[in-house]
Amino acid sequence: MKLVILDRDGVINVDGDPIIRSPEEWQPLPGSLEAIARLTQAGYQIAVATNQSGIARNILTVDTLHEIHSKMHQCVREAGGEIDVVFFCPHSDANECECRKPMPGMLYQIQERLGVDLATVAVVGDSLRDMQAAMAADARPVLVKTGKGEKTLEKHRLKHIPFFDDLAAFVDDLLTEKKES
Image (tube, rainbow, N blue to C red; front, side, top):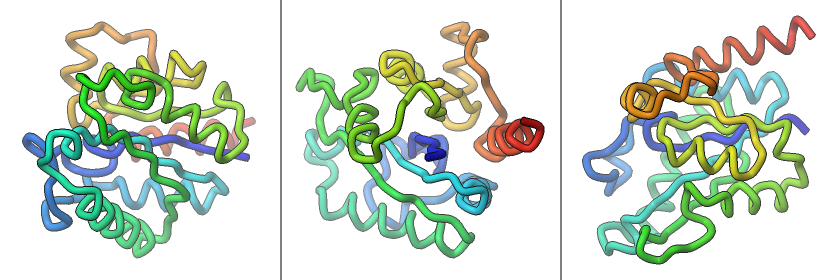
């Protein structure tokens, strides 16, 4: 199975300030929906792994989060793509859970659900937490410079991790690489 795991905020959609609280606030980043569609059409499954501490902080309800994700699914489908699964961590850092990135719990849940070896899976994110979770799960970390990505790259000197301007640039590279293999 070919799989790519995506962070949500800052990778697929514009990062909220401080969080996205409603479907109306959810806005895709330029080119992200089309990039997901290209992955889908190339035979990849798409999983989303997103921290959503707004639930623990009573800023967001699970029902509202599902409405936001329904909008995301609809927009991706309209672009010709599909998101196969969405995993989210509803906890805050204070909960010290295993599913909140930088811990790898969500990635392990995806691995178990889909029966994949994470060593072959790219985990695309815009934050140090995303990169740490990918490395902890022995997956392939990929940084995009959208969202918090540019600052993450500058602040943490992650030059050893592949980085791209955005999700579309990563997909261009991935699909070109697969054609050449």
